[in-house]
Length: 274
Image: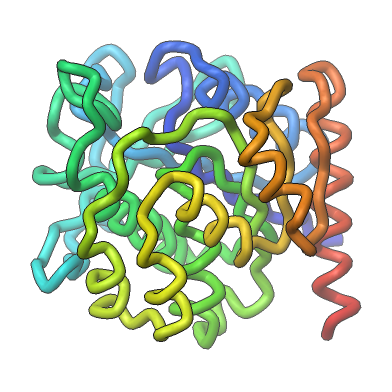
């Protein structure tokens, strides 16, 4: 029987970045899912604060060299890879000079959110999808961690929905408390329109606040799970109102088993629909 394939797409992951709720979950869960018998791939941005020498990142030439157009501008896509020896797993890094070379993650040295985080999220999600196609690896489920990865549900459902590579792919979005307190660029809807999104999505994203962006990301997901133990009330409400399959918070010691079963459920729902 062919192994089920789970693609983990995360805003951050340890040990390449300091431990945080997202970074720790994104490090431990893929290992557990792999050890449970599923096949995995892991993708994250290659922020400039990641020490390439210490973590032995190297460019994957055969996967690099593509250009992605974001807001009518070409942006080269560079793919790098490194190993987490203790977990026997590889991590792929999405890199770009303009979006990810700065020496921080989603905020600047003053703690202010980057003005182009909307474009960085678009580039990151599209870069992952295009790279997975190049790998010839078809995921059954894409599991997204952090709002930088949340656009994945919209891309799979609205832009790549006619691509046979992702025809049967489901998207699960993990809901964390970590958000942004500065609205995305007001022209974000126009960038989505240029990228090929229909009027429905463009209109839904006219409000570029974290709460609304999160609501739209969750709307297009096939499954949601709560990853913060004490979820913010506004996010909990969006989660509760969602009509897709849902998984409440589970402690770390039970996470692998519960999420593996949740992935199976999501995949089975897809088979029933067919």
